[in-house]
Amino acid sequence: MTKNNKTLSWSSARNICIVKTLAKLGHYPTRKSEKEAWFLSPLRSETQASFSVSLIKNLWFDFGIAKGGTIVDLVVAIKKCSTHAALEYLQNENSFSFSPPKSSTEKIGIQIRHVNVISHPALIQYLDSRKIPLIIAHNMCYEVWYSLNNRIHYAIGLKNDAGGWELRNKYYKCSTSPKTTPSFYHEGQRLLIFEGMFDILSLKVLDMELFFCSDYIVLNSLGNIKQLPETIRSYSEVLLFLDNDHAGRTASKKLLSKYPNTKDKSEFYFDFKDLNNLLTHERKQK
Image 1 (cartoon, rainbow, N blue to C red):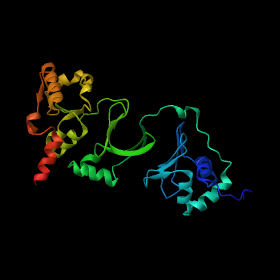
Image 2 (cartoon, rainbow, N blue to C red):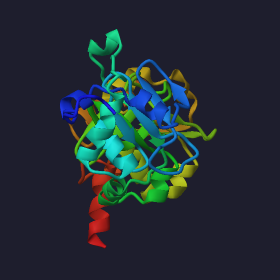
Image 3 (cartoon, rainbow, N blue to C red):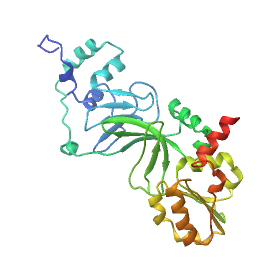
Image 4 (cartoon, rainbow, N blue to C red):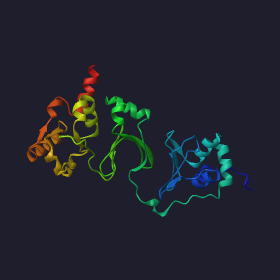
């Protein structure tokens, strides 16, 4: 025991290194980078490491139960004790001081933390609100956990051809670098071009036959039109499913004038902004 009978303060306890404390408890990282260490969760049984410790902020997060926090929160969870008891335990670990790497002062953008099959109830509910069955989303999208502005978030993710992600949830949409288009090829003679991930998912619901006998590209941003490959000239037809707004119609006109094999299919949802607006309207009417 420490000679000082005064219980360790919360602020002092936060400076105790989580990684060193876990090592004393018999938990060691399965992989490590400059920014984080990954463990098999000390809070539950698992075979794939989904427990992350930030080596920059000295915080932990268990993606399997969507919980995280400080070293004090971790001791409370592991030992199933009160905060006061956790602070008493950590008095003996006071020498395990945390020293963030020098690069920790650098500004950090979106960091992908964990990728899994879609299973979070909030994301399933979000898909349901957009009238996308889970089985439809499972074949193309993932549940992506990421950090931004010192907080952990989760979203529906669609991976692009360069390894970046388009991320969507009920409250927020963003993307990671590199930002480009996702493409899916089935060696078909028809190519479909969509503006966003929910457009392609919606068509998969609305016209499964057209979906499965075609290749397709998701622009994610109309600015990515310039990245379209010249191989689109080789298709017998290219169908455009861009938004029914000024920007979408302008982009469609450019593609129609540049590629003679293109056709504007926005008349399919002429009363709606996009395919998902059409889908949600139809499902509400049933």
